[in-house]
Length: 165
Image 1: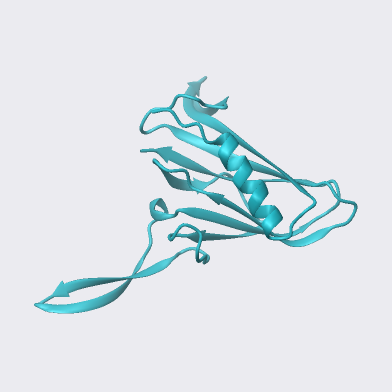
Image 2: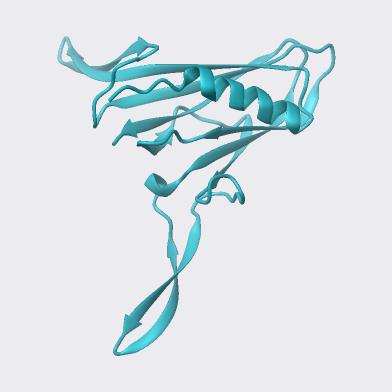
């Protein structure tokens, strides 16, 4: 399977940030193939930048470098990153305490903090019943961070991991 999304996602990110009035921001998406290897008896991770050919089951790290290129701090900056097709969301890349993280299961139309809930209709004892269930992270389609504040010339890293289907 060949995933060629960095250029497209970078364009989407810049467009999203500009559309949400977050200029002057510079957004740069970096994708790396993540491999667990054993070194001296310890399991460690090895990152291969810019994966071009990935296989089902491969783990990919997506990190957006968000840089405030302006001369003043910016507050409440939204940055949105879709989960690429043929992949599933796995986990955040690291502690994202610099931003409020929200998720979408409908392609970015609505967002909420985890755990997300959805209503499903099931048949129990011959009756149709609507239940609220927790959404699994592998159902997330889009991630949005709202950066509390980013100072002039400051760079923040936001990201998550995905697994290729």
